[in-house]
Length: 503
Image (cartoon, rainbow, N blue to C red; front, top):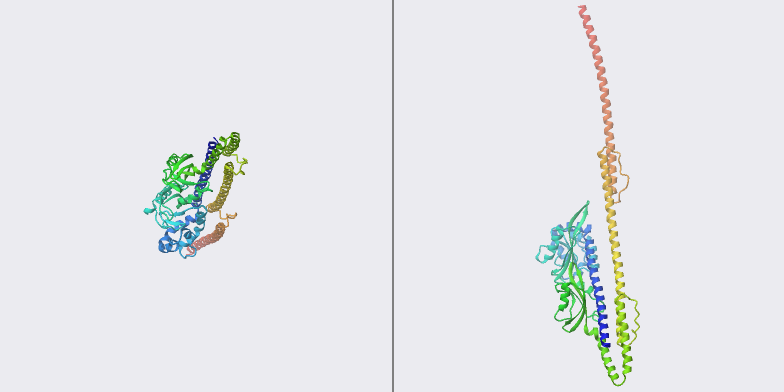
C-alpha cells in the first residue's frame, strides 16, 4: 500500500511538473511568435526602407557582379556576412544599403530571426540581412516558390495584412524547411498609402530549439520536442528509435493537451503535451521523462518496505506497524502539499527536505517543483514588463509620426489659405505663424513673394494713374485749340463779308 501511494504520488507530482514546464515553454513560443510579427510590422512602416527599395533595383542592374563580390562572400558564415554594412564600399547600392542595414541588423539580432528579405514591386529580392542565395534573386525562380506565393498575396492584399506560410520546404544554409511571415512595405505619401515592396521574415526550426528546451533537460527532464499536426518533428530530439509514439501523433492531429505513458525503444516514458500555434500552423509541444525516473523513488521505497516486512514477520509486527505509519503519513502529507501546489498555493512549507531517506528525496523534488512555479510567475511578470516597454516605445514612435504629419498638414493648410487670398486679390496677406524648422523656409519664401508682387502691382497702379493724368491734359488742350479755331473761323467769315461789301 505504501508503495502504491508513493508511486501514485510521484506520478501525480511528475504530471504537475511536466504540465507546468510544457505550459511555460508554450508561452515562450507564443511570445516569440508575437515578437516576430511585431518586428515585421515595425520594419514594414520604415520610410527610409521604402525609399531604398524603390531605388535599389536600378543600382543592382548597374553593378550586379560588384555587389555580389562585396556583399555575398559565401566563404563567410551568415553572421559574418550580416555584420557587414557596406559603408566602406564606393557604390550606389552600398550607400543605399548602409542607410537601412543598421536597424534591420538590430531587428534580426534582437528578435532572433533567421533572415529578413526585402522584395521590390518587380519581384526582385533587393536586400537580405545574411546575403544568402536569395539575395538579388527573383521570386519567380523555382527555388523561391514559397516567396513567390507570399509576394503575390502581399501585392494583391491589404497594406496592413500579415501573411504566413507556416513551415514549408525551402532550402537554406541552415535547414531544408522554414516558416515565413510577410507584410507589404507601405508608406504614407502625401496622405495616401503607397506599397513600395514586401518585407519577409524567415524562421528556421533551429530558432525554436532554445524556446522548447527547459532548464534541467537531461536531468529532471529527458525529452522536449515540437511536432507538427501531421507528426513531422519540427524541433528537439525524440529518444524513441521508432520516432514519435502513436499516442502523441494522435494528440498532435487532434490538437489536445494532456499526459500519457507511451512505450519507446528504451522503455516507457511519461509525456505531458500542449497544442501551440506557430506562424499560423498548429503544433504540439511535448515534454517527457522516462517512467523509470518517475517511479525510481517508489521502487526504492518498495525494496526497503519488503525488507522491513520480513523483519516484521520475525516478530516485530508492532515495529512494522509504527514504521509503516511513519512512511505513509509523510507520503500523505507530501501528496496533500502536491495538490495544494497544483491549485496554485506556492506558499506551502515542506518540512521533510532535510530527511535522508526516500521521503526526503520526494520532499526535495517537491521543493524543486515549488521553486519552479515561483520562477514561472516571476518570468511571466518579466515578460509582461518587457511587452509593456515595447508598447511604450511603439507609442512614442507613433506620436513622433503623428507630430510630423500634423506639422506638414499645418504648413499645407497655411499655404493653401495664402494662395486663396492671392486668388481673391488680397496681396497684403502674410503667414505669421512659423512652421516646423524643416518647413519654415516655405513660409518665408511665400511671404517674400507676396511682398514683391504687392510692390509690383503698386508700381503698375502709379504708372496707370500718370498715363491717365497726361491723357486728361491732352484732351483739355485739344478742346482749347478747337475753341480758338472756331473763333478764328468766325473772324475770317466776318472779314470775308466785309471784303464782299467793299467789292
